[in-house]
Length: 487
Image (cartoon, rainbow, N blue to C red; front, side, top):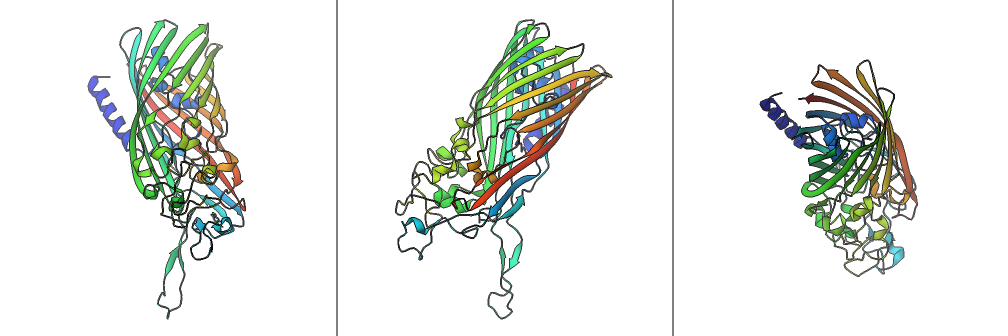
């Protein structure tokens, strides 16, 4: 492959990646795997690197990968994803948080604090199909050193719950309001609600062979992150900055991090791998500094992976990884919703402690470190998770075949379902399969399939005293195809 062709492929790949929407939600909001080969093994591969995208798992593995270019496209379908509410709401959806003006003789009286409910019933999110490309290139500087680049979506989340159909509220021809229609309030009583989180990683990697069987590697990570939220205006009374809480506006930020790794053969046919990705410090989402803790902070949590691979017979390989994602690194992700009702968030008008509700005026800023956007503000309540990944690869009829399975802890506690309607990342079990079909001596076609089993989390609505129960759910599948050139 000549330089002009490689340069054209790079330009096409980067343009496609920058234009494509990214929406993953597998292990929390991280991808279960990256390259097509890696995904066929349920994401396992810290000790077994096969292509230029392997740097996304362990940059040290690039020392054992030939000079090659990988392109791929994924069809990702998180469906169904949605929620079900059961029980009898004490107030209609859309009732403002806090004391109702004119009805409470004492606005600071706890009995006058109104509840906040979501309408009973089941609702599924819109937008079920996403196309997600990736690109990677590995270059051999000499027999010991490699340099490369991998561009991919690390994770994300997308939900969109429509506000409902228009309903005729005045059918009296003699009425001055004849023909008036009203749109149903949606999830939180403020119309169509949802979020869109997208992450793009530029992984500039290098690896060095200490000797023929052991290598070290590292990556500089340049990360772009984009976020949008809508339909959350009813929570504005719990925010330090209500004007930057919700709105159909994309906010884009950048950040930097690093990934380090080791990979080596410790016995004949036995390899081990270790990789660590630092917490990635991102710029704040200024347009959502009234939503995310620490004034719009939404960094990317640190992770580490331990892996091993074992040769089996003439062509078989068993791969196993354990990955840890430290969501508690990030307050916006891990702080619980109880931060809003524990006494640290106060009404700006009269310093009323917010109990099962908020201030009377929905756009009056709240006061307190635990309010939305505060230094210790409420978030999604996610917990750290560990993921076990197991895969098997073998060769038959000149084709490499793969199967895999992974299981993760549940990141979402039962107490956190109200906010996680927006991010129902409940799936825990992934079943995968894949293949590689050589095309001549210098090209190959790769294919992988993943199905994430449906998982549900059910818990009480903390703003109506548990009168209603909220159950969130998700399952998903993806199909990824890739083409590679070796030269």
